[in-house]
Length: 145
Image (spheres, rainbow, N blue to C red):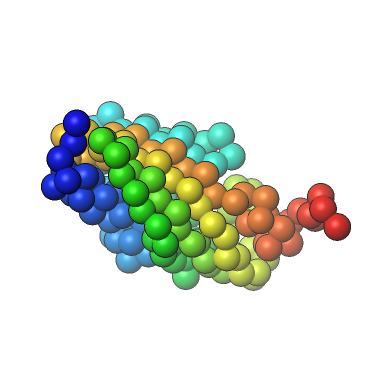
């Protein structure tokens, strides 16, 4: 069982990704944070394997949303797992998954589970409100009136 110190450290490590990698654009930090065999189970069925692949996916995302920011609103941890709820915001200014820039902004919630192993991020499950994102970008209509 993880001690209170381990749990606090795991939370610190996990929140560095949205705050420093994504919001501050410190993509080189991925090499420090991620385990060599890192796996991300991302939205839209996209997975990344290893730090280099995750770094490239984040670079591509930030090109589409250059003003992107993630704000951690809640964070809890137990053992080697950290759960976060974050607010994601940005403006669609570049190609995103084959969708030309719309100039529209988005503001959605994101749920992330992060597994820490030996002080590094081994695995992340990322589940943003993708329907809300696509609605706000104007590329899909809401199925609910």
